[in-house]
Length: 179
Ligand SMILES: Cc1cc2nc3c(=O)[nH]c(=O)nc-3n(C[C@H](O)[C@H](O)[C@H](O)COP(=O)(O)O)c2cc1C
Image 1 (cartoon, helix red, strand yellow):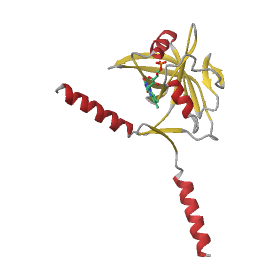
Image 2 (cartoon, rainbow, N blue to C red; image 1 turned 30 degrees about the vertical axis):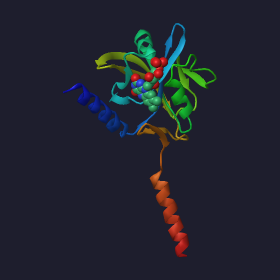
Image 3 (cartoon, rainbow, N blue to C red; image 1 turned 90 degrees about the horizontal axis):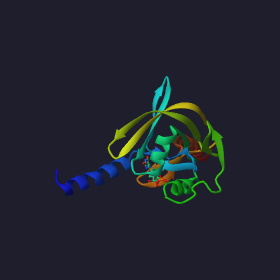
Image 4 (cartoon, helix red, strand yellow; image 1 turned 180 degrees about the vertical axis):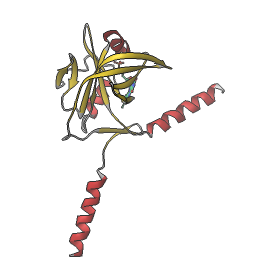
């Protein structure tokens, strides 16, 4: 494949993957200098017995080495309205954690108001091209049923459209109109 068609393929791949709608998470870990963290959408469930999930982290990122060194990480699933957190943790700003509502689980920082969170011990670390795949055994997790998740699609943040409640509204409206 020529260099230009490889680049074209990369662009098409990114566009195609951006159509795979995901949630948005903040992956956190600890370092001797304090907490480290980054925004990530490449997160997936792996196993129920034992409980395992995976995260894919770019090889050049500071958070990649921090996870590798500490052997632990947490995943906080962002809720609707937390786009600011997603952008902050996708940047290289000095103190990503300043002013954030945090709590601790498994000695790891977890965002307050997250839709869900998982605290993990790294069990395996695989090379995945220009990313590293960290498989984590889940040692603690929790979730809220009151918050809606932040959604990522086509490079933009969005929210869930609750089709069932829209359908119910339309039905109620039709019923009222027919009376
Ligand atoms: C919505 C969104 C999702 C992202 N998902 C990932 C991901 O899954 N893996 C990854 O390596 N980088 C991902 N990034 C980019 C990182 O967050 C970004 O490179 C960040 O600067 C890494 O922090 P660090 O350099 O302090 O380690 C994502 C960015 C955004 C905005």
